Image (cartoon, rainbow, N blue to C red; front, side, top):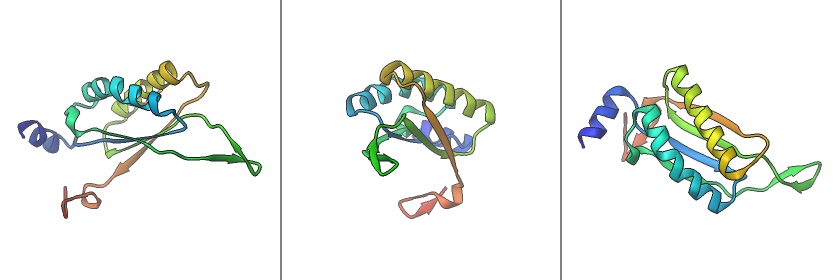
Length: 122
């Protein structure tokens, strides 16, 4: 509980990480290796992270196609330096495990007044 309170006071509660265009086994491995590194980089407790694999189909010119990994990070606003560091960590680990040529990382900043847990915003 103390960890959660400290994280809330710093504003470093969550993030939620969503992955697309990655195999299930790769996503499991990525979530495992990213947890400790991102926790250290963001100063958020490991139990505050969630990882999600979104199964999706990509199309180009009307045909099914493969895509590069697309990673979305939903979190409360953090300093640019922290965001840059996390983007590098995510990119490096995804490239190491899934071996794609390109990796896209997108950060979605959430307002604490728009984020509700059990009916109450932060």
